Image 1 (spheres, rainbow, N blue to C red):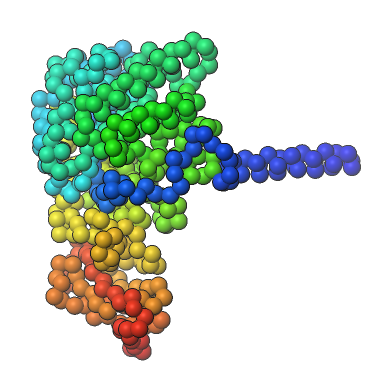
Image 2: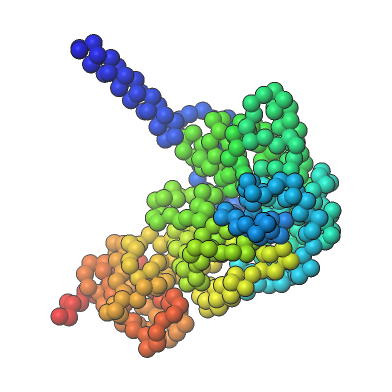
Length: 480
């Protein structure tokens, strides 16, 4: 019995050591890594500062998957439309022939760019090719491109030029996964696999260099499909490629998905430091506190339906409203991030009616309230139930963006020590000051009642006096 207990003790001790070692691998900051984080902390150059102040972006998912639109032979595909080739009901050979039908006669790059600009987007992420490997530009390294479709014309060129002309910065999406390339492997199990994958890596490199040569207006690259074990084993190769790409365009911005570290970690290396220029881990989800982003730059990419990126003709489940999306946008900015809204045009090149309506509604709100989004970030004040704070990084002007109106008409504010509120007014009415009541140490109430029913978020501008020698608004005994 004692021997058995002793063995159990040794087993538990061994388990604790292993678990502790495993945890240290993700938290310890002293491991020597050859391919870990490029830096500790944020990039501080003007290119990254520009990215940080975008606030709102647009994502475009488009390719031959828009032709079936989430259906095949009368059957509904429940997954994300751009993944339909992986569906058991979708014959691979049939899918790979769809490009011969791709002829989007209604495609108008300038109209897309105008819609993005009117929505308030400051940058766009465009799919150059998704996991199926079909290229929306005439790549010289494969025949599976737009050049061999009935449409023939370079779509990426048209989009880059149209968005650039509209003043919307262009970022290119590129999937490392390529189901069409014979050398692609999800994992490497044999020497034959390794040889094939070496050829695939060089193909990938050539395509990326080609994109930056053809479209030098590109501000950054947005990578996808880097979760395969085969790619995660290529730390040295990807590190060199990362440097080569950055050398081509000064200030090029690349997120945390691209490079693996020495142990195959993505996003964060074995020391817990972010790799890349901003965190790409917030896909269809958002942080709730500033602590969750660990001081890093980040963006959230979001779909309108629950999980459709490419065009699916049959949206099922919850479809977000413009007010929901505006709240996500404000929340992202309030936590120091950017918000990127996805659009999935159909096979003819048209952006669907639901997305067009949402873009217009967001644009209408942005037209009056963009000042709380552009150049804004996190204000380290205690969050209240009425909504979110943002602060202009350049002017230090502070904003209350209100989504939940209390029945009392009293909007509570808790400021940090020695910060007093001296003035508040509606963004839309600077001359109409709102009543402010001081009701305790660093506690204030802004009184506001609208004579009309609120259907859109309301913005209140707050003016503070951070000089502790100024009495500001003095304490008032609450009225009973």
